[in-house]
Image 1: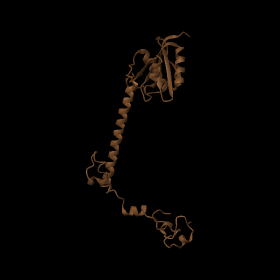
Image 2: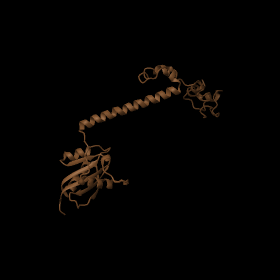
Image 3: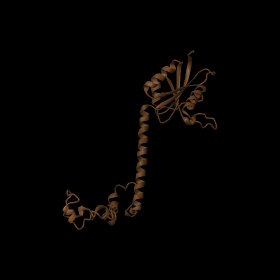
Image 4: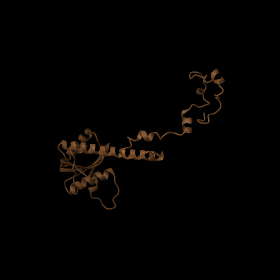
Length: 234
């Protein structure tokens, strides 16, 4: 088989696998689905050697997605041409809703040969690091806003709105004043905090290290081991 001058390679990149399809520069050539490859550097090197045996020049393309631009940087570092395209800018047929890894890789290779794809800007490593910091700050602000909304709703249920203004800058400053109003009811404190009257701990003669059948426990009038507690039902 004669070696083609240029191979257009479409990649459908995922977390652990990459679907690969290629097509030669000649118009009469058909798109060939090569299969799937791993995402390790050794798997990428093996794929490059296999494709270089079929074509002198390789032109890769894949869709931008959650996997980032590591593949673009790795291929360009080896001196290979690679494009990253936006999924929203890819031409699609009306009614074509079937989407598989194989179809995506074949379509990318075909559209790359026909010249219907436009690459997007790939940021440098420093620019991407700044983007990550900005996105992390935006996420932190969203979490802070959600926490303030939950706190306001909690204070409103506890009649905390009357304790003072609950502005965004005074939530932390006014918390000691509002927390005074947040006290459990007497029945709740009695049931949860006080000792059970039917437990050995309520007996003054009973010691923590004494077994439940000791004389002190049996002689205590307030401790009745066979009577269930009204609070904890034990």
